[in-house]
Image 1 (spheres, rainbow, N blue to C red):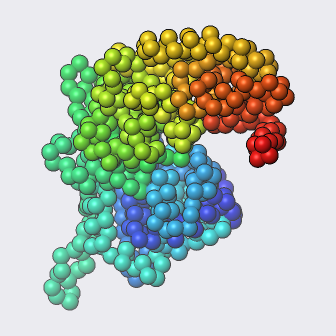
Image 2: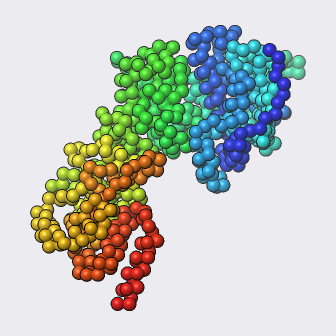
Length: 633
């Protein structure tokens, strides 16, 4: 093959922005560049092992996989070399010139210019190869894909500005070598002791040996021959999950998490377990602290790193966890699966179903334990992942009550919008004869907490959950009940609080004000399904109610926001005849004035629930007219 000519290409726009942000935001933790590059080298070695399962020739003449780190203090360089899978020209451009990652635009939009906040965001996105430029003003990458000829080697060079050069450059051995030309004030990293410390800190858990040149013992005498270079493993080179829990420090667990998740921050919690019996496997599962930017993409890459008998098989093995747990990171290592397992085989393998069920329960138990013992950490988890967890009752019917125990909501017992009330908390405070869990859905907490529908519940001292996430109404439709108590939306259907005195009072009012109801119904015939008197309100003149079997307003808004066309839905207007405005309407003989009052009452009911008016200007005009008549009267 003819060696490719030298070519200069521009970085993708997002890469330029990423490089600038990273260099200026992560200056306080520069050493993570080595963690990221070792992690990438380890992944390349894992991928070689996997591809070599079907093509042993990829090992060429060297099956001894390793990562080597060297330095040259005089030249100011640090070199990280692996003999893993390597890259061809197209892969170099794809991996080192672009960021083909979901959520890139959203990530960049969230940047604030505040270094501390931005560094956390960068950590969620993953720093990877580009962290090299935190300490280097020039980076060279020399690589060749396993199985290709020496002449197919590629050299990539960049100073981390607007472009990079790529050219053919023969490479005798497979794999990738990265040479960092350190900035003048980063010379500390071209030091053996410093590098050894960082390898021990960041790579001890990696199952592939990370080697450095052994420090030679000083030899006395001027004519003493120079000692030959001898490489030695600096890390323990034993997969973390294969070790006993009792011998692993928390710091080691956290460093391993950062390695597999490419995260900048520690995880919130983890669970390390070895299962023996009918199935034999080891799992190490982590709960991240913050959500990734592609969390809402249910079709995106997700899942665990899969190993079979300590041999890496694949990233993102989604078959081991249901979609609502797609935020979980970790590894699973099986002794029962074949080494040539594929995604198709995983889909149909009976053992996978058993492992999936066990791993799911283990995660739910881990979250329950966190909620009980570390409420502040659970609060952080809920704020980041709560809405995804709410997909659980639809995804996982068998565990829906376990999942529901983890839910947190706002409620009328709270003073703010903090979602801290569990369903168990609610039932513990419920009245003795209460057989329902009452809830209200709203666009936001303020709208929900001030809803007229709450008035009778506050009067009777009954707690109501305030559900403000758009997914809530859909979630409740799949959950339906919790510990024998059914859920009831207080904005739907007729309200029945089993109060005989109230029922009788309502019946008497209906008979007394039948003519008023008919007059209002005639004025709003094209806007509402029905008009009736209410037993919900104590202070407000009216409210709108959805039919018992009709779609709630929150679900309607969610579907409309997704672009789904829905038929028009008329609702029921309930009026409170004890309110002075309604009493005034009842005595109003001027039909024009009566019509205006009816329109205003109806539109106020819409506003109170957070809906938009079809004719805001008309509402303002009517209100001004009524106010003027009040002032003139």
